[in-house]
View 1: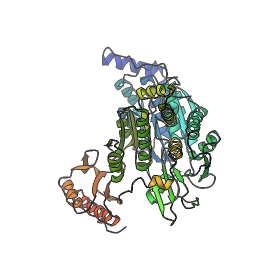
View 2 (view 1 turned 120 degrees about the vertical axis):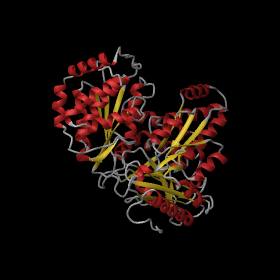
View 3 (view 1 turned 90 degrees about the horizontal axis):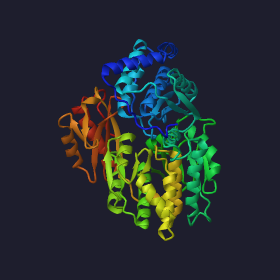
View 4 (view 1 turned 30 degrees about the horizontal axis):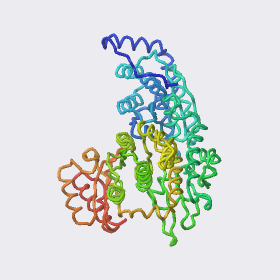
Length: 569
């Protein structure tokens, strides 16, 4: 739908004429219908919500009006960009009774920051102010209301999602937008659909079969080249968090079964979504999910509730649990890509993007052993994605397992050409061509990342233990300190240094000096009045001590409330 649309070419003569025109266009759009429908999706009194990195998220019963209004907003954004826009109904790794919604921009990326503000404004507008807010947004963004609009919608498996996505559709249709409802999808699959539709199919076919076929074909091609695939039938245990990932992986598995056998656990048939399972649970509790028996040295992984995060893990021969998080995934992927580039003889610039939460050992290994440059950004996928776009090949992962790799158009062209050549470089170029197809470049995608990891392990003949042994994580500890107002803390240098309150950074510097291989930082939470503390050092005992001492400094200098932080975990 959006492939052939260019950028907006509207240039209003004067703002006053423009306002009159917008007002007239909105009247044409039947304000009566908007008002009537809006009353059917009434906003609860006094409810204020903020559009954050993950869109809106709260208890499902408070979201009906937000869904309707995001349908309206998606139409305006579609008209403004002359592209297809996505709306995803999900609350990812939150409990089952929550829900949420986020908009997907034309290239499958997250909503532009100025439109996040419009989303917040529209969601919180009182009933009588709705028309004014819609006119304001249309004016500010020079939206041509005569332009066609097309919106695609997806939802996760929560009991509330079907009804809420119907409210989105009400919002889209009342503003005269066209839509396609994909029904049940993982979040990254919706990002993929939006990207396909706005590149005229150049990125892929915007159907669920198109997604399965593109990824599976690349995966099967890659695993055919693995020397060990013949004698060792590869299998993997997958914890699907009782979410949408189970449905989609089940639909997809026969496409790639010759390269990999997957056993699904927490597939939604009996357990609750994200309850005692899923990537977030495994990462934060450092233990396997309920409902999965693990034998020693078996490869296992967990998706989160909407299948945009993945972590791996295994039990060693002594029964100890080992987590392989986003840092180690990024290391495996970027090392492999670097090796392929060396074989092809292309001097392309590859960069790994991390946040301050990345383990110091991973940064050291990448920079010193693999000679891959590492960059640090603020926490939040949009910051990582944006930075990764600056390289020929940009790999980004958060420690929580959300990430992907991005390849510039120039790289894709170069690799396609090399793959046609009849020489020793051809094999490596062909591998890289398939790896590019296997990544979902629109967003972090648990299914895609799982297949990339499985292909690399097969091609390199690595066991899960050998992968884990690339480097040893420095022991670390994360804590939360309750404060009266989290805004008293401001940071710089990708959140690694505190600017305010005065004296806090100096106190942290002095504490860090007491421990070997140590570092610590604090940052305000994006969602609640707490300050998050991170510390790492050469031993768990030192990391715990350092985290506790930094917590005390935060409590004293940043207006801590409640009980003073206590030592011991």
